[in-house]
Length: 535
Image (cartoon, rainbow, N blue to C red; front, side, top):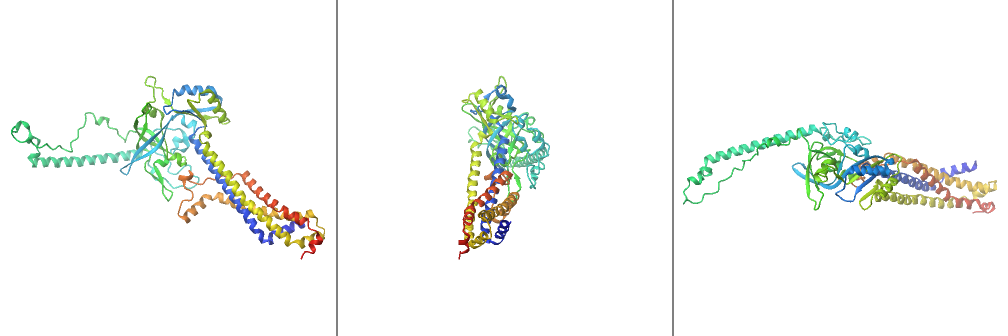
């Protein structure tokens, strides 16, 4: 009992130990915050990467792709069908997108992904990042009447409304078409007025009349006449042209789904501003197959927006109907209508092992022609870098707690020297060496428990309110603390793992106890007679 009383008394009165407690607290809190953020970052990154990349990707090593995807799907199911849930064909090709905004033409490099609307949502998590609820259920490249998300459906809390999406869809397209019609009518009216003015000018000046320079009525000896001015407002309309005019108020081109960051930007007040919304038309330029390839352009209508909240994907990916892309690139066999694809996205069953399926397919198909990878293989360097960074940070931050341990060691040696007479009195009263040693070990454990407990509370509170704290720092410094263009996400992801927190707390307590072992042994070995004669 006396050991507990002395430990409690030392803990309350020895303020010099407060430095060690603070060191332990800061070390534990920092490790909890770093591990939580890194775990959240890794999991979010894996989830969003996995949303684009299916469990296993079966791809061609050539941009021309491979022929007859149905035959390849049958062979894949024959080799590993017991592990496979769904397969979807795709075509991937680099390209350029061009659209109009504010009277200017904007061009942006993109990665074009041709997908099969019927199976794309089964083989990957693409649909969950779309902005129309119907498309999240079943992907469609048709323009919807309306109903696009005005508030981000992936937001974990309150989000700024996206007012420009309120009328996106057919309503916006009809309004825009009506505006264009009125603009054309105004242009035609201005041209008619100019033409009328030109006609009046001709009547007032006979030299401008074409009949005045008719060769049949002109003397052969006369000087050559000046060229007749042409009417700059006269336009030739081919027969039946009106019947072939594309009516954007009633028709659309093939649909396209754009990455959110391609056609939007976020202002300092966290509001999204759109350069293009569902209902607008864009032009896509990409190379055809064959040698040499040639560039072709395809008019398309925006039908939805894709937002995975990974800047790398949202700023580069566009999705178009697979058949339309195959036709435009010349990937269809004219005799059979069967097309080429560049990859097959394979979704595995819940309990299937990706590397096992990958190895089965690699044995069934020649590696010189096909590349077969799991989604982790495709993003291996990025995932390994994140894991390595977490390990290095843990080692560096654990040194903070180790420094606190050395502080406890130095302080305890000082306390043993200072309390030499007290130790002698305790031993003279019958305290055993083990009891004296237990006092200092208990004191060290108390410091570890108090420091690690306070650190755990501070660290967990910091993790819970980490985005609010980041907003406060951004307001104080006037600069973005967590730039989404660098760190991929718009909010700081954080996941608390109870096992990791327990290991951190236990490690801090263990270091504090180990740091008190040597001073405790020295106190236990003190001779009571020598201790009483001290000073």
